Length: 91
Image (cartoon, rainbow, N blue to C red; front, side, top):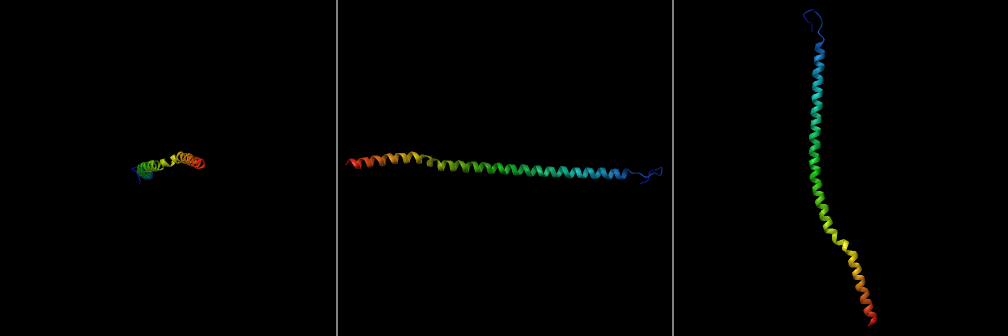
């Protein structure tokens, strides 16, 4: 463009660069916002899965708790067996 004094106006290029910069900046902000929303959605999903996993582990703990009584039961059975053997030997 030429101004009223016949000089070439170079503000056109600067204005284009400003608009391009604003557009690129807006695109970067939109991309960051999209990623943030995705991260939040995934975090919520992981939280829900963690609650399910925790309840499953608690159920497994309750189901396997009797296994920890096996050593005491074995000791009692050994004592009974020893008593039976002693009674047989005495008779």
